[in-house]
Amino acid sequence: MTGPIQFTPESLAQEAMRTQAKLRAGLDTLREVDDVDYGATRKEEVWRDGKVVLYRYRGETAPTAKVPLLIAYALVNRPYMVDLQSDKSIVRGLLERGEDVYILDWGYPDRSDRYLELEDYIQRFLGGAVDYLRGAHRMDAVNLLGICQGGAFSLCYSALNPGKIRNFIAMVTPVDFHTGDNMLSNWTRNLDVDQFVDTLGNVQADLMNWCYLTLKPWRLFVQKYVGLVDILDDKRALEDFLRMEKWIFDSPDQAGEAFRQFIKQFYQGNGFVKGGIDIGGRAVDLRYLDMPVLNIYAEQDHLVPPDASRALRGLVGTTDYTELSFKGGHIGIYVSSRAQREVPSAIHEWLEQRSR
Image (cartoon, rainbow, N blue to C red; front, side, top):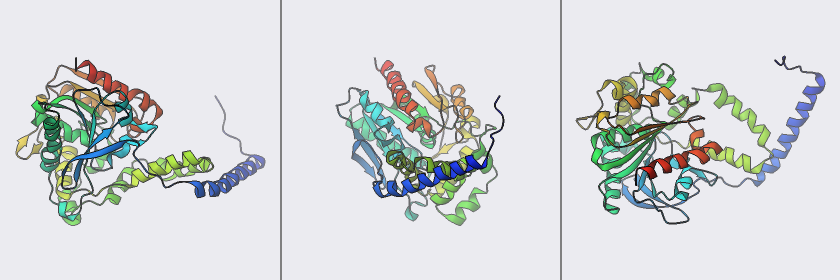
């Protein structure tokens, strides 16, 4: 066992000199840093409904998969996290393995979207994209990958329209919203969401971001910015850092009515587990998920704890259910080097086995 760190005047002086050198080098590095952009993969718009756009990704070679894969991300952040940069792109990994990948971009809601409901997001927008793909590819059902809140939406859609989904993949998707280690759920459990939405209308992105950051205040407000000093003389590392910061704070506002319904039925009502999710007058029952299901969760996820995702096993109606645990956190599952090696391969191989 190592003892406590011993500080001496000499060691403190050396650390101060090292920090000064990093800061001086950082001034030169910042002059060289390019405007950070995102997205490593070419994509083209193929379908639109208002602000919601369906994109098709284009890889270096034509896809070999016969069934398209639609990705539905969360509303609270932009979906380019799955294609952040060339060496951090789940999308690129899927394309390289022959998948035909599409993604649904929810856009940026404004005051005109104040009264959009969950039915609009799930049946109209997600359902519209699914129906477009079914028509364009001349098939009855497509593959669906739902991520985080987009996974919850995708579960609802698949339960309400099981004949249109061939294979379902959930990634870091909350299912049981009342696990004891779900801090976000505990915060919202007693929220007067009616007064909240009636007062604000749409829920501002800055307010949502503040809530997420305060889940880990030391790590996200202090530690990562102190650590920034260590990479100030590394242009590529600094650009990677800034690209991630851009994604974190590039958050859309939340349409007020859909937010109200989501908090009430999911976070407060725990509707997947207890029942009570109503989408356009239709009850959601996960036992109608009779297609193959792959459930991927992150072992160190602070936003969607593993138990919140693993609850899916006992709720679906299929006998073809697979779980995959990933050693990492909610963001690492998209951008870490481990994720680039493991996640696209796991998804592709699972889909390939069910396409024979």
